[in-house]
Length: 179
Image (cartoon, rainbow, N blue to C red; front, side, top):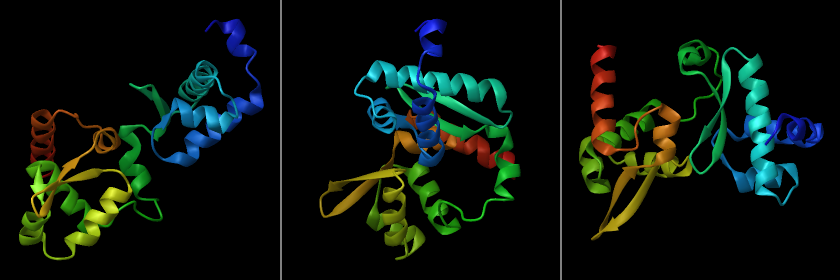
């Protein structure tokens, strides 16, 4: 899309896209962006999201808009500012216990619910529910139990690879640097 046509985008529609990206807290699909802007055109939705990205990425220091494959767009905090922001966050997305369960799933995936109960206790069932609700894990039937894996949303949120062996290596490296 040329500069001329990007300037001709209605500012109130671009503002609606910006508001949707801000409020979502996750990557939005082109269809979701189009719905927020009130347009049926995927091309216009992408143009508006890219216009928001250009404005945010050009003016903000700690916040960015990222375009993922699909395409999908997310407004997020730049990784180097997460520690600072964490000190001021009022309510964490997940409890420490749920995050610990998530780390078990990420490292030992695929892992069944019964294996998780042995390692983490029966409270794991609530953790699984919470983790599925935010879209970080997905479960599939494996006999009588369910086996859990992390999702691409998990990888995007934490800045990790979607390829399992690379993800596990990244987790090992992060654990070693935290000690």
